[in-house]
Image (cartoon, rainbow, N blue to C red):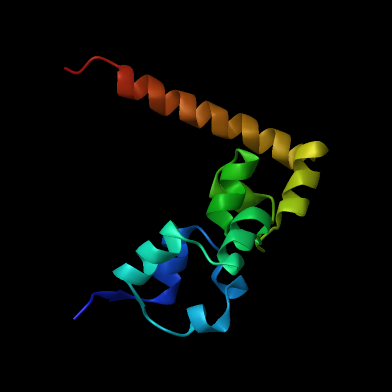
Length: 119
């Protein structure tokens, strides 16, 4: 018997916002083979979600260059689509400028600590 996963897990692995997926995807268990097939030859609905969104918070944060907690601090709780993300990038509000700077500092500090000599 094939190992199956919940649709929420499959959506996370595919980097898509589950509520935007077709009902057939949202309501049935997904096998590893199904997931591999979706990755290898994405159907139109999956290609559209990857291109246009709406995107899950992890993807929104990555596209904006901030952390997920930075999105939460800014009150961004809903999934955003490519057009909304593009508008934020084109004319960044104050919160986005602050959160990007904060995120860059955190990433730089993590890199510095990783490179520090052991002992």
